[in-house]
Image 1 (cartoon, helix red, strand yellow):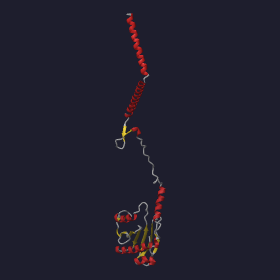
Image 2 (cartoon, helix red, strand yellow; image 1 turned 30 degrees about the vertical axis):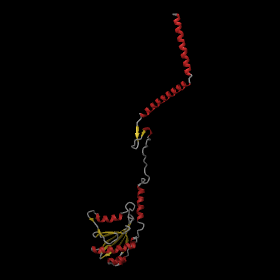
Image 3 (tube, helix red, strand yellow; image 1 turned 60 degrees about the vertical axis):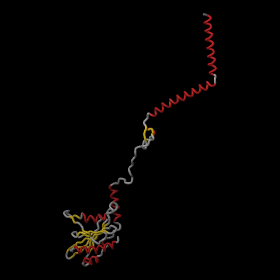
Image 4 (cartoon, helix red, strand yellow; image 1 turned 180 degrees about the horizontal axis):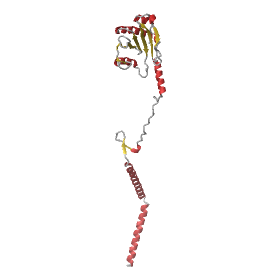
Length: 268
């Protein structure tokens, strides 16, 4: 038994030494070293891919947006936030006080009346006497202009006609009172006389005008009011009014003769 035990022990020791030698020689083998290095590099790549995969999975969970209706997918965090629009008060039309607006209105009226001539110099008493049939020495002149209406100037040629006191002829020249706000004032003024007419002083009656033919660019008249109005090509408005006993045809003829001379002397 003792011999058998000794034999077995020696056999085990021999195999152990053989394995140790193989292990030592294997660890020193260059090929084995290359294999071990390759294993380490492979394990490192696998570990890195696992980490990157976890990161990609984390980012993929974030919502994505589509810009410009295309198939390009852009992460939401990369879209720039638009700032809200800002509004500024325009400086072209600043708020004006009542005094400033009134001053501008008066300035506009002033520019419209600069060229208006003195009305009493537009007709002579001699010319009126020849048209109407009256003694020129009986005619007196009175400036009928009013400072409250500086855009209009008028003159009253008066006399006692056939025993009627304060008979006579009134002439007037006016320009656009609001040229900046209403440049088409003159055409509308004439048209309103025909369409709406004029109310009597007590408001009980309306007097509509008829066309005053062959006078200026456009004209209108009302025989009941004895007024004849027209405008020229520059939109100056003229008027001749009578306070005389006459027929409609006589007044129309007088107004046309006096109006032609009036425009010629005004030379506007």
